[in-house]
Length: 124
Image (cartoon, rainbow, N blue to C red; front, side, top):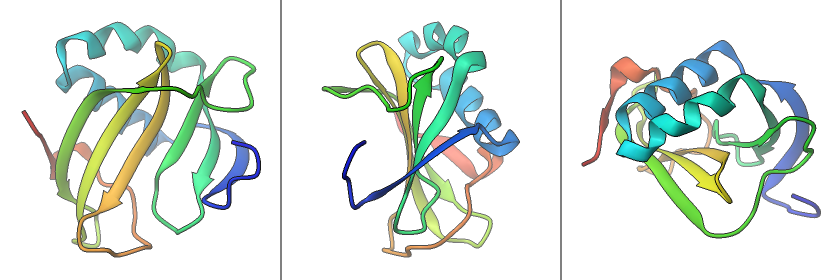
């Protein structure tokens, strides 16, 4: 995401916690979500949120930026971060590619850790 004051460009592998959370979301999201599991081995983080939350933008292969365009929500969950912050977690796909793991504090907290799947429930 070029020239976006809301993100910090990075190029790194998914953390163990990010990978576990994305796998859980793909397994428990909408019925089409499981078809995206094949992409997971090639997904990496291309930017993080500048506010301090654990939201990350994702890309596959050698891409340096996430795909853009209309979002398809693959999974939507709510629960709590390790610090007890209430969170909403949304896994987005754009142009048929995993593109964003969005983690929002519903109480406005800016800095908190990534929740584990055990602390979440899927919104139906």
